Length: 110
Image (cartoon, rainbow, N blue to C red; front, side, top):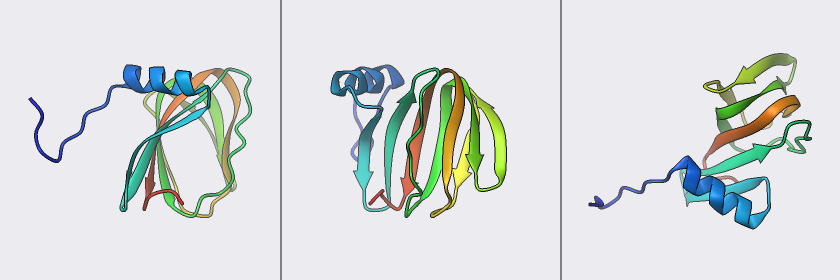
């Protein structure tokens, strides 16, 4: 039974929708205060992001890669959580295993 004001998603369901769209990013939630999406990059792929106007949080669902934000460089894998301030240049690289990321923007991505 669904509660008013509660919406539920599953990673499997989001992955199916994203695959049907054939795009690396699927936005699945948008309200004024935030937006959320699933971002998938293949092993050996290239992350073409540009800095965003909003604060951003990534949760690594699966995969392994390196992540650079400004002068900070680190390895990320399943379970990693990254917070990136608005305007900071960042990207994933050396993607060793397909990278699936849950992404949240606050406020909603413009």
